[in-house]
Image (cartoon, rainbow over all chains, first blue to last red; front, top):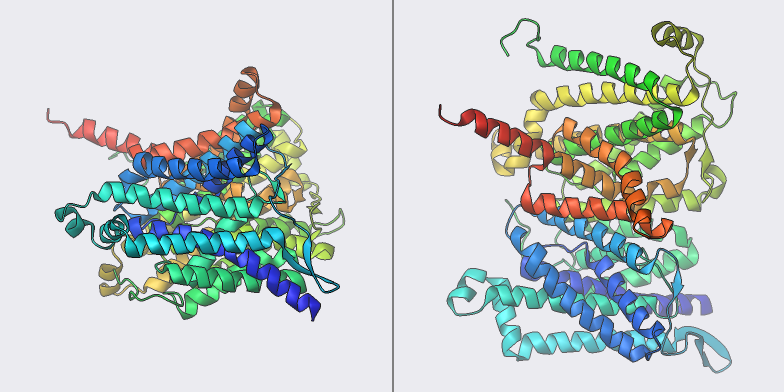
Length: 292
Length: 346
């Protein structure tokens, strides 16, 4: 019973992070029809930025802010300079491009920050909380993770629902031509979309790194899990991404707890295959599958 | 073009090129050091895998990040069949078994992948690349876990030794034998791929790539065309994996990281999607560039470990640059330059 509870709690925390990562993928997919495979190394790079700030003797929170800010800039820069030319072209070009960025960022981080495991601090306890006389698998940092992701989601919802910029971003994503005629600077909105997504991705990176080890490849499996979570939710739907992330986090946690942690990626592959075979549009898609 | 010396049928032409290639390979292999022979064997197995991938991506428009994982399947089958000196399975049979098993895995993956396109397919095969090494770790007893499985290379048969001595006047070293095997496999694979690509099957693959609806209206079964392309490509990856296992005499999860799959794609993109010559050029780059760049890096004062990361940095940058500046890749760009210069009015 206790193992069941702990596995579920661990899955919930992990699921929140996958949800954030999936949300970042969905934000980019909605605005530019590109699946950003470079999201994981982007988050890895910003996590290393945070580590550099913290190791220079500054507080965790300054590092945290530096990571999110560098995420914002990195996302905007990559969209404007590298990705813009392939938007609207054959989809295979965009896929190859983001994979190229994947390799570049990976290698660059290894050259600049070194290729070894380094420990990353956590601002809150990483010991399980004690309820009565039992220790449960929910840590202080776990609670922070859940709260941080929920806050970010609320902020995003508020942005898209209640602000002018959010409305313009939605218009630019929904119908670039019409939006342009109505005076929306579509290019700028796309850049902003990438920047925001990159911030959310950076947050996911920080949350995974907290209290554990970082390494240029530490986010590699997360891009798979984030992608599976996003596809589970339909790749088009932010709510779907969140639900998909939570579902995936829980299922993978159970696989890891009861079968073996080595098979987690295989389980993710299995889930992806089942979803794509039975409901190619995901659990929450409202647009019909594209025909041509 | 009109010369009688060049055969007109594609099969005969491909075979002619392959025989010429074999002669070149034998001559080169006997003239270089053992270390270079090892590198050439590496070039050959990367070339085989890249050849399979370029057919899939270039001719059929499917992208696969799972070819490293498919190579792992071929390598592990080879390792399981050659555990010690008295394994007794003849080498051709081992390679065929590796190809057959990978082909089966490819059929399963391909059947699932046939319904997907673009980013979905890339994501699914990415998951495959990340998942497969975990299987070797989970089944530690049979698959050796982190250390992997040792591969014992059977002694070359007597007639091969005699024949090489007769042709080159030298004794065949182990790495020479492995390199010869790998290049022979490469040539067989490339002849098969080139023929498939030129024929009816290849025409169907291209039709599906260019316009799904038009292809379907022309009576082509989209699913079947996609699955067949994936299966053929997977078979090549299986052969590549077998050659890798024979060359490095080890099948271990660390050989089949995500990086392998991604760099294979980089090689194929660089060479020009769909071109076998381009795939071979890309594989050559993967083989020889790391040493050059790493030496350059250490010369500039980087530590060895950091300098080793410069090679992937170059692949990645080249990949991005090719997509942005020359989407046809190396071979395509050269070809279009040639045709434009030919087409200029006199």
